[in-house]
Image (cartoon, rainbow, N blue to C red):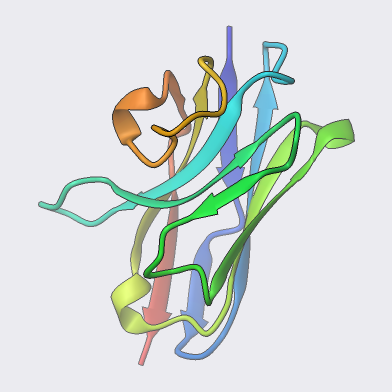
Length: 126
């Protein structure tokens, strides 16, 4: 049973940084695509970035690529996203997700993902 556990969220001042981690277990992830999304109350889940577990190819959301960087550590089965220059508008819950179908043109679409973590809260104060 695939499990994704996020960590690293918290409270930070505007302009600060956080590093979110997602520990994956219960599966063989070498052919998976991994993604980060975020969702504010009452809004749709928004794509942040994705990475291919096998090749390391990255696909970030245009609006966030200058500040957020995704990475993976195959040995630790962990995918991270570095959040820099945080703004109050970045305050929300961030989710890790895994797509068993692997890397493809749909990795920015939340419907491509089969497994989700429980989320980690990021709060940016002004």
